[in-house]
Length: 338
Image 1 (cartoon, helix red, strand yellow):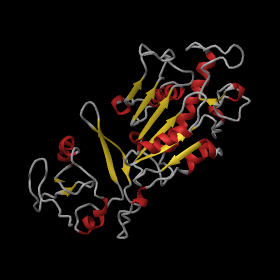
Image 2 (image 1 turned 120 degrees about the horizontal axis):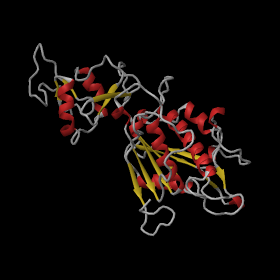
Image 3 (image 1 turned 180 degrees about the vertical axis):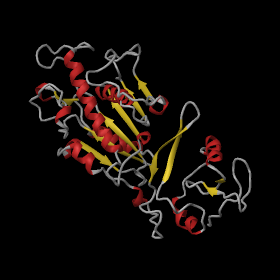
Image 4 (image 1 turned 90 degrees about the horizontal axis):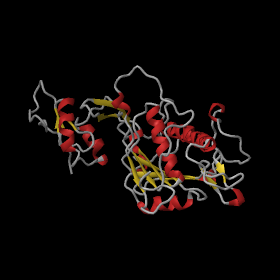
């Protein structure tokens, strides 16, 4: 099976000539374009049939189908106003300039970066990271459990889902995260967890939804203790996501923000949705999405979660993350009206 360099632009249909160079799509190598503008114009149609053929990269490089002067493919996303934004490189291979191209699936597995491991702390039994079942960790789903639960059932759920090209990171609220002093705006707790330990050995949760100290009653949405503990949890999650997406320190393994998805249940759903809001306020590229089951935002704002001031008028580059909310018609804690 040979890879033949395209000789015609798939959009404007101009053919290759001394003045017109046709470059192949570096994902599927089956079509080519004479310019970036043609590639962008055709992407909406081409993405429906574009399938990666990583095993053909070495052969395509030998034939000049792909440009070997770059070590990465640049990813661009289209904004609402039709303009395109460069959101960073996709390192498909360890070294595109090398003839020793690795084409096995292990070269596309990712590990948690050193920064992420340091953020998660030393509580290895309170989170579980698993590679995609197909060995390609292009996407990442972060699971957040409900009050009193832990990460184990969600780790099993992630395995059962067998999402293609998707690694999973299941987190437990029993984690003791390594956070800088500036982020410890939380009420001091006797718990070894960064988050909230429930009484009577009932486990852990992400923030205070009830008065666990005296009455056991549900705290109002705007109760200072609920707001403060939730704000702290959101800040902690923001730090974790920042470490997962950080490639400023030449980290080998990281995920693009739009390749990260949050999956939260009940209290975990509220944390996931609030985290998406803070991510927007910090003017970050939107995450891939969030699925919130039986929970979500119940407050106008949180303490410490303030917008980042910027002179950049292109606010569409920092849009909201898409959120799917799933709730039952008889759910009293988070009803459909909420």
